[in-house]
Image 1: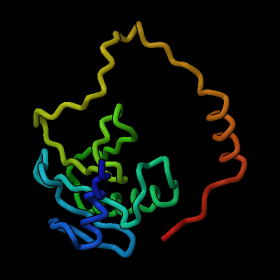
Image 2 (image 1 turned 45 degrees about the vertical axis):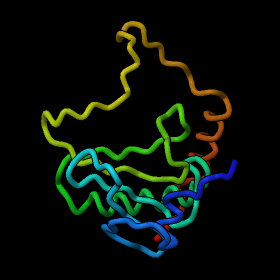
Image 3 (image 1 turned 135 degrees about the vertical axis):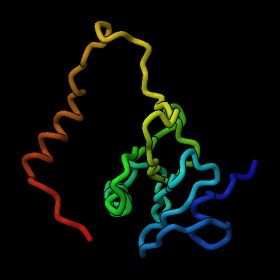
Length: 146
């Protein structure tokens, strides 16, 4: 079985069509094939990165680009990204969805656990995550990247 080429890498390489909203040296903002709202935009890095946990620098730079786009609008919106099939990721190239929202737009986020408030128990961070957070706090803020 031949692995399919990454659709976003194909767009970046100019081998697949896309409606480009904005282009930067390291990222593209494009209209998705099936936008769920007017103004729905994807922000993708030009470098192939499978998801937001793979390369924090690329993820941060891509988020910065998405924030620049969002800053140009005063409309409420969601910024959504996923990591892994179980988390609804369907294209395994980092992409951030900017989804403008309006009151009663009918869009539902899939984040309802089905548990009532009294059934939810907050678990402490696993030790490795807690230690990583402490290390980050000790080292100070990351340098500003442009």
